[in-house]
Length: 154
Image (cartoon, rainbow, N blue to C red):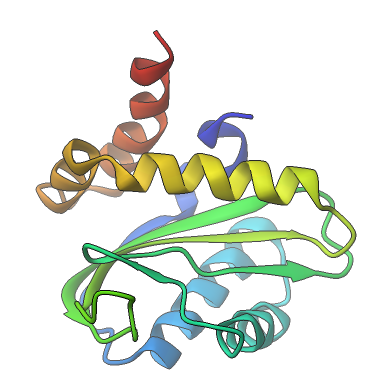
């Protein structure tokens, strides 16, 4: 599985006016709605529901919200860089500015876990995160994310 197969360039955004986790989830849901054709209210509800099980802020300014959605055919993702970090109840209590959200079909197990592991490995790379924070162009951010995997595999 490759990041380029689950993250379309149009699903990478830089957001300036995110004031809360709820607002972030709405923005991410709108992105996956427009890029992948998901119902944005369903995506939002799924993210909110998953978050009640435990926060998906993994530390170092990174969050990996994820949810399963009925009727989805494959795992899809959205990446958001937030200009002003927001409180996310992260494990290290640090605000979040890099968010990689994943949505998987309701019945899938292995693909969802493989995608989550892939995204987690990518976002744990301090060099990748530094590059993401140093750039504002969505196309550049997409390239950083998708090429970082190719570089590690070589």
